Length: 335
Image (cartoon, rainbow, N blue to C red; front, side, top):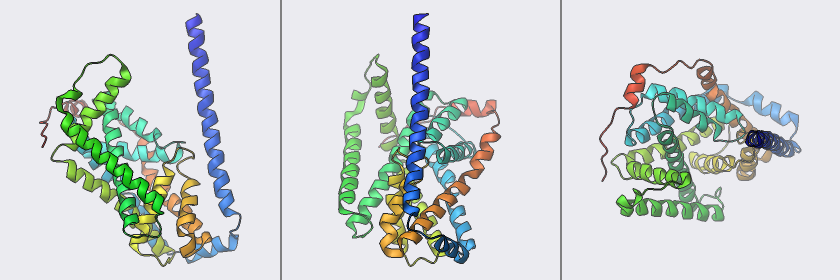
């Protein structure tokens, strides 16, 4: 009875801390947005929306709708290197659901946790499902940092030198980690009973299978293409609002704002993304227009994720043949 009582108290404390964290993040998002709105007149918002070219706004939404497709292809490549065959259609549906959940949950990992759970229902072991998402996300973050570093060293005024240096250090550290995996070889195959050690070992072994294969370069190219897709969507929105910016400016600004929105201090990145966008583009297009731009970009992102809500409401059970296909062994090739 004492053990059950102690377990119940821990569960209650955990739920209370989660609710408290959710409330805190909602407050942070609201306070930041209201703070940015303090000097913006309603007439400015009405004028910008009235002059907006809606056809280019919807092109922005359609461009963002490519995110689940690109994500599904990346995820399929990673899973194939881990020994699982999954259909692109199934992965796209699951990725779209995760994208929708990331827009409404207080952290950016809630949708990824759901992705892991769904893919386990399709026959993938929980360890490999989790490792595949970690590797896919790590590669996407690495290429995002590389994009910021390239823009910074290329002389973009939208990337502060300290951020460019930080991004460069992270990219170099990632490259050194890959090199370490390459020379470690069978040393990764050690036995341990501690769960955290086993999990880290599984991540290292999975990363070695993915990053030291012939599909590593196409996978990295897909990650860069995903970042470029964000920038092109931002460019469409800029055209809709008639902003005098080139594509290179959107590549730098959207990349930095996306990196800022990944900080787990807000809901769906709201507030943090707006503050970063105003700081970056305020001197070029005005603080009011930069805030309107960021809010519209967030709205376009939400609109592009709405099909994920429909997929969530209608989630058919995986077929038996799909479960069997997921367990088919495939040849593991390394270079």
